[in-house]
Image (cartoon, rainbow over all chains, first blue to last red):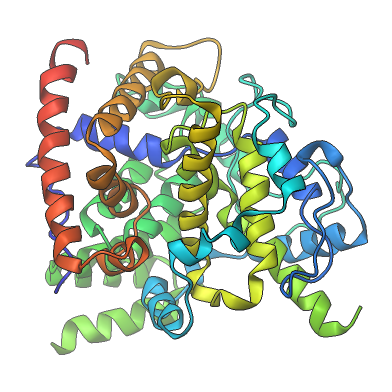
Length: 271
Length: 174
């Protein structure tokens, strides 16, 4: 069975789609994430060998935590280079050996009595979120306890870019009127577009367009244009996709995604 | 620590980085109030840590989804609470100075959450995983252990109902 027709924007109030998108972008507050990350079970996973280092407030960030953070830094570069349909690989892998939710929920899976003790308690162990804190991308290094994260070459410099576009283009009445820190971030918009590419290319395209409206010259412009080509291709709009691919190739002769776009264009032209 | 063990540990932390927000959202959508969520997130990753070797690399997200669902329902039973919706999971405005647009965005997001809750769990689950999390329908069906056709039925019914509820409630206020 094919994937369902995406929820078409002409069939449904765009405000509803936008509201859904904003719900989809909910994130764990950074302060909570930092605490939880520091309190992750230590030791290699599996074999029931790991011992949770206590409640989320425990804050036992050892050497292992620092190693993990370096790995996290590696993750920053970069979703845009992921081959198009990761969920399919996922399904193949998971067919081999995947636990069902019921297995997962078996008594063994839930927890020891000491774990359980933490559950019934409604008192937060970790600090509540701080509303004043602006939302941050999940790809950003977040743990304040390790300030020395190496910058990763492909990490978008979102700050300067949004500042540069602070003036907007004066058309007003939309998100461009928002101060830069209140707009959705470039990386978030495109991350969401990427996540929807397969299941709902139409919504991915809507996010691409939103990015283009908000950040016409954004630092992630090349990534955006690649997503545009892919979304159009998935929607079956071959001519538009091919045209976008050619525009991209002409505008970004040295882009890292060039090979991928050339491949896409080849497919579009050959069929 | 052996090299392999260290690699596995790194991988576990990467898995946390990739999926923590997802786990957070799943718990939120299953009615776990924000004050309790950190504990359950921690618990979910403790389970993943224990059962690491049994969960295929590509199946972690759906494994965590099952774990969260179960943790949330356990929590609700223990706490003898009805699902708390709306305010508990309301989005925070990104700033105190709220231009009209931001106010509207927050209000709409809150409304859509409430409406999702009204859909009922079966339809909501499918709709949320497919429309919000971007899972393919196959992944949704496998993760919920329902036939693909059933998943489609729930998706379409959920869309219809959500759109109708939206039209009914958002019309006057958006």
